[in-house]
Image 1 (tube, helix red, strand yellow):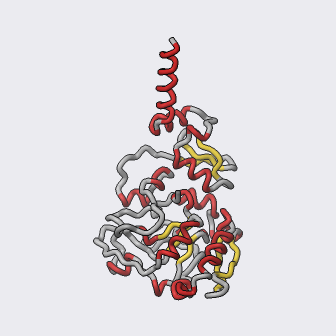
Image 2 (cartoon, protein in one colour; image 1 turned 30 degrees about the vertical axis):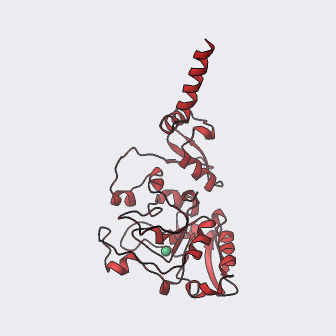
Image 3 (cartoon, rainbow, N blue to C red; image 1 turned 90 degrees about the vertical axis):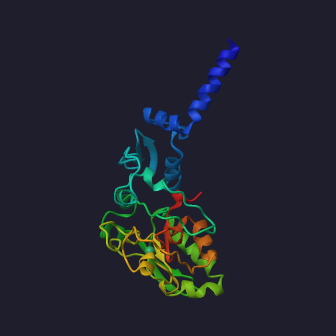
Length: 269
Ligand SMILES: [Zn+2]
């Protein structure tokens, strides 16, 4: 009898720890505890504590009660569909790895380039007016550069960028990459699309364009399916400092954008 119970308990604990069963189990329980919530959802909750508070019935729940669909059930989305109509689970489909790139990204490997528009509009502001209410000005690299830049206070991004700026300010050898900041806040769509640029939210920064490379400049096209030759001139020290504070780098994408850093702590381990 005792052996049967031990075996049964062992099986039950294995089942509950198994990722597939774990997520189904979470969906059956409205008030699940953290250990029944998929790991990527836990990452969203811990990354955006002021907004995302729970997970229930395949939806993430915001503090104000609004719900966002986690998994739309559509399998094998094409790269185009992933960019145009991702659910929240799709944000995690490609793993962003911190540290130096070991080789140029494989075709269509763009971790972090898939973004769920409604989720970010909800946090940072759904209109230009709403976004502007949360903007503030900081001085970028006071010793080396001293440029005023406009960024959001949401998710403490102004403070994080001030910390990044202070750390970069100790590297005079990096000055040419850090001067003439290419842009932070501009309410606009991504070139050639109907999707909001992440620059619309003030949580993204382009460093010096003159020292940067962008896939569309290399292929002289906007065709996502073009064969693209990888190119980068941004030193790893800059990337490391941004990543340490929760920012991903566009230089890790097949569709590279090496000036571009974006606050996406949910993707950083
Ligand atoms: Zn950018």
